[in-house]
Amino acid sequence: MGRTNSILSDMLIAIDGPAGAGKSTVARALAARLGLTYLDSGAMYRCVALAAIRSGTALDDADALAALARGLEIAPDADRALLDGEDVTEAIREPEVSAAASRVSVHQEVRDAMVERQRALLDSGGYVVEGRDIGTVVSPGAPLKIFLTASPAERARRRAAETDQPLERVRAAQASRDARDRRRQHGALRRAEDSTEIDTTGLAVDQVVDRIVAMARERGLVAR
Ligand code: DC
Image (cartoon, rainbow, N blue to C red; front, side, top):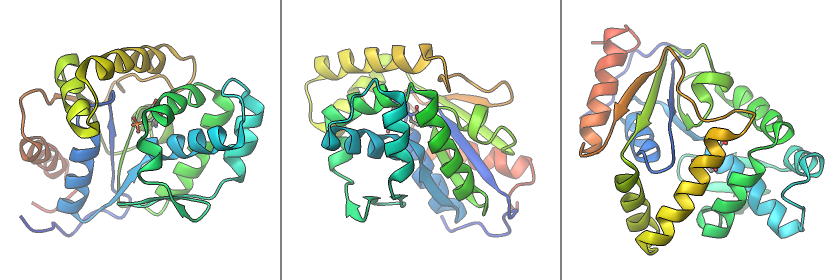
């Protein structure tokens, strides 16, 4: 399937949802299909977490973390993540960094720093962005908002296959990250009222992408 041109210059598709719902795979494929740029906002929180671990910054010290976050050079490109010029694509996927990312992202001060950067990037338009708070906080005016879900068992199974870790361990880590994502006071994971929920359990990536492209067409966001 080729790229679809004639895209509105301020085109932005926000894809939120819990870990393992298929956000990354779907967002990447969707961006490729529509000729948009993919932005992984989670990679930015992961970069802050990695920098915190490396520098010995306490994960509960909001001010120190925010100062650290503001001083970092983070380039979350489509395929690689660069932190102060170093390729950290693999390093930020380590389980220790996943757990730390979940902890650093609870702080409003850290979120403010990240949201500011994300908005600056998105300002140029033409993005598919994935995260937890894109449709609710980062870009509430996005013309198309999707909330992806999948059953907890399916999400754990996907993550285990992706990371080569035992299913039970993934399931336990997922449950505690989910609880923290949903319960945190700031930028909590919740569905924007004007978003469309898609349950990806049992669906192929292309089926999900087709649905979203159809929605974008219906709304006149891409040429028919
Ligand atoms: O999507 P991910 O698993 O790579 O995200 C890593 C962590 O960052 C996860 O614990 C949730 C958090 N996150 C967030 O709070 N807000 C976002 N927009 C994206 C991710």
